Amino acid sequence: MDFSNLEQSALQLNALYEKLETKTYGRVWTTQELALGFMGDVGDLAKLVQAHAGVRNIDDCKARLGHELSDCLWSIMVLANKCGIDLEAEFVRNTREIAAHVSRELEK
View 1 (tube, rainbow, N blue to C red):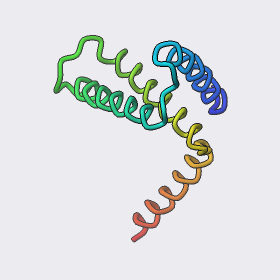
View 2 (view 1 turned 30 degrees about the vertical axis):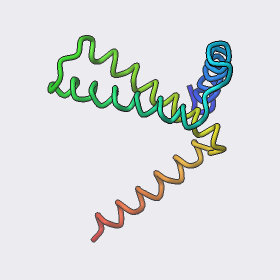
View 3 (view 1 turned 135 degrees about the vertical axis):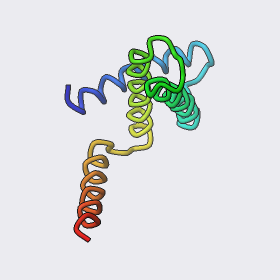
């Protein structure tokens, strides 16, 4: 699946969540609330990475790690869209700049 298909899938899921949020809370989550949810997912991810490294005991760690990584990616894609960021273009630009910087450092 390419990036645009992943993004479309993330946004379709977000649309479903927004319907549920409206039904449950009378409104959709703000970008700030989405970011707070993402922070919770990052905390869960950190614990699962520790378990994967053997310093925490979490049952079914690898499957749960994959799930949490996916949750984090979903949050990033949705937040980027809501903030008007072309995430694919930014990722390409940023990784090129970082690779150029690291390459220059290696040449020193």
